[in-house]
Length: 335
Image (cartoon, rainbow, N blue to C red; front, side, top):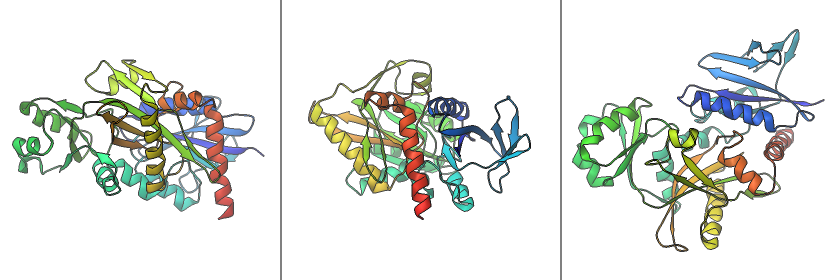
């Protein structure tokens, strides 16, 4: 019998609709001759499976099952493609652990850690990973720190962003002290913790990776070139960016980035596909590799970075997804 795959999307962040597009991408990649696939959309406590006839079925949270006509459908595997809470911060992973449903991402601890950019950066700094200078401001503490204190710590220009959400919403590049308070308000509209980060002037790149029990796969690197001030929502989703794979960087730098990506994957103990964003600063071939963030549920539309990188490696996204599903299910059987 074919395994039943639930592609879990939606969530409660501003990237809800982006997640739906990733789900459609994953659905299109998966071989339907091998797997039965259902998209499950989550929004708050409304969990619904999308059925072939266009109707929706309520998901039973006791076992993540739903009815298709008179037939009870209970997925064998959850492919999580929620960008933001609850699928990228460990909440959904904890639920799936409780009901013993295998899933595609890292576990609770790693999801929670990578979701908070400030915590992640300082954790990886202890392993020798280079990150930009930053500070954390919690809601209610913003009046206790002056603009001059912030600028003394990170300088200008700087980025003000939600510490525990994606990087598409609530991000402001601040060039003058007078812009700081408004930028904080924008970021606090997305979450309770805000990170202020030093600006790094260099080449932005991103690199995907996944590992199974048998092999390590680091994908070709993508160079990100945008006409915007930075790689914001408009650049990501409205075509105001050039994505060049493989990146136009020195081969020795590409090798160092690939090794670092693999090392960070192992340091964190990740599972499934991750994508790590970097800024390269300094002279060509001798650049400093500055890590920006780790994405544990990267976009999976047809034009997203990861599918681009997979194809640049001479593979197909459906093959990679199947590799992750089968490796995870075999691990579960052994346990």
